[in-house]
Image (tube, rainbow, N blue to C red):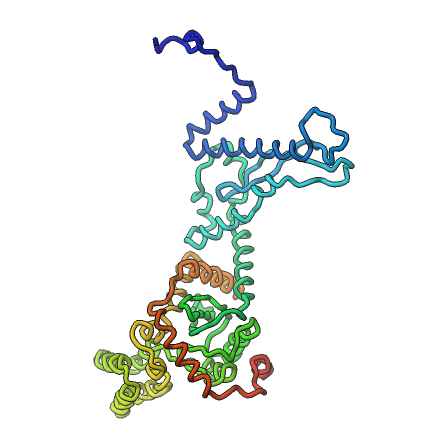
Length: 438
């Protein structure tokens, strides 16, 4: 066959497309020049229009056919918006009203694509990934010049409003999580500083080794009011104070006292990294390597009595020349060996002997906040921190050594049977009231 011969001359009937289809294809040719994605967007918007018209036919009936029993009628078209590629794009949507004309009937197809949640999700993900409000528009996928000219919700103020709304919702979701069905093996509490503002964050570790962000509060672990509100809120949300939980903390006295008031004599593990820094800060540079080595050697022992003896001996040697270091080491010394006393060994011990799992979550929070130049309010700091914690939760894996958690749980339960119950006059709610009114 001669390739230069038109198809019609080759015995094939030439198909003449309707004018409307030719016009639509002509627009798509222009979109194709802008890229494959822009072409796909143009096709997708055309398909969306057809889907909406098909739904109208299902609800109202075929156009041009009289039906005395129809329950709805067509009511023209009007401008609408759908979410597309992190922006709002204008479309023409058909309208349908009830046959008596009293109410407008919604179209499910339009409602699905007009949902703003995909837009909100796109804004939050890009902001937490480090995209500023000024640069948000430049991170969007190309959808074609014509569509782009009609798009909105991409300005700096619109993106900021969307992010504030979503992070405020994230904060509410985090602080309202029910904990009645959560069985914790350990709880880690630490603080994060944000340009002078401090938030306390709480991370739970279940008996299966799963990490769960439990909440956050404005203030530091050294503040008795904050510490009481922190633990009391967890109990009010359903956390059973009678279940055996290992607390891993930085050593704040106010927090330690509140744990005793709310959870009785629950086992507390002092973070070894915090304790090590506190001791070494009292020493000159030349003395630090030797003392650090001796501290770590003692903490690595599996024999509790022997480890405690070595720490006491070190404190005694420091008494004469560096009494500040000796006092820092003695403060809470036995609680640096809680895991050793409970018989926890290996990887699980190394995981739970510091607040490093909580610090890892805090590091992700800091990474999501790296573009924030100024914290205008405490509420802003809480919103960003909550969003960062939930972002970190998506990346969580089970803790290292989780298979040995049964050993810890059994040891805590044994400890729980013999611990002193908190005084009835100092229940979480009453304790909070006492502190807040002091």
